[in-house]
Length: 157
Ligand code: PNS
Image (cartoon, rainbow, N blue to C red; front, side, top):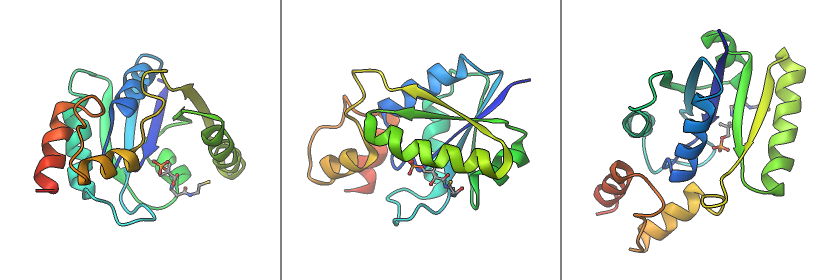
């Protein structure tokens, strides 16, 4: 069984993440979407909130499981039995950054990383831009799934 981990901070999860989740789910037998509990910056949404939001937006994907994790990604991959990490890349800056991490992770345990190029209609999206637009009262309805839009509204009210 091919199990892949799709890791990230997902603060908040966006339509760009959803695009990657759907495409990755079609490529592997099981996809474990793994939400880092403590990203370097203080997250807007708690780990439980981010896991719940992603579970809601991926409810139609039967091979997907959403979990939180802390510590090294390679250790988490071992725990869930995944030999593959799948990451979305939007531009060359992402490729540079992700390549270094992919090489380090492969050096550590042999885990392979597969890059999926972001779809053109979502490649300008980022969690940080979505947070800023929402904080400043801008429209996010074309950027995030409906559940996330509601959660942002509640969080920033
Ligand atoms: O959404 P992000 O911020 O791009 O996700 C980055 C993430 C969580 C995938 C990365 O920071 C990570 O793997 N963190 C776990 C700690 C770790 O394994 N660090 C060594 C990476 S080579």
